[in-house]
Length: 90
Image (cartoon, rainbow, N blue to C red):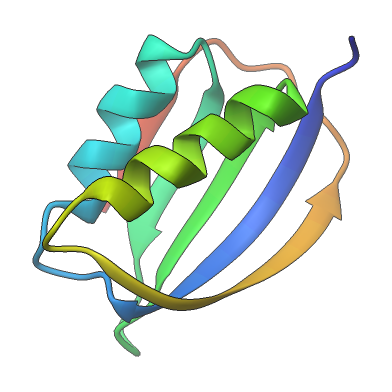
């Protein structure tokens, strides 16, 4: 199954609630690559790459966190990249 890459912008209560670190640990446990970063407007931007089914599992895991409240996600497909891990950007 081919990998896909998604650029996502998360809106809602997503900063200051452990979103980035939850995303990092979930993504790494699922062998997904990419990055996640807080933006100044209160959103969180993430690029994640891997099997579509595993990206879906990552989204389910983020939604299970009682402190994270995702109101909506803007998603765009991107070209895959060569990378080896999932990181938090500052």
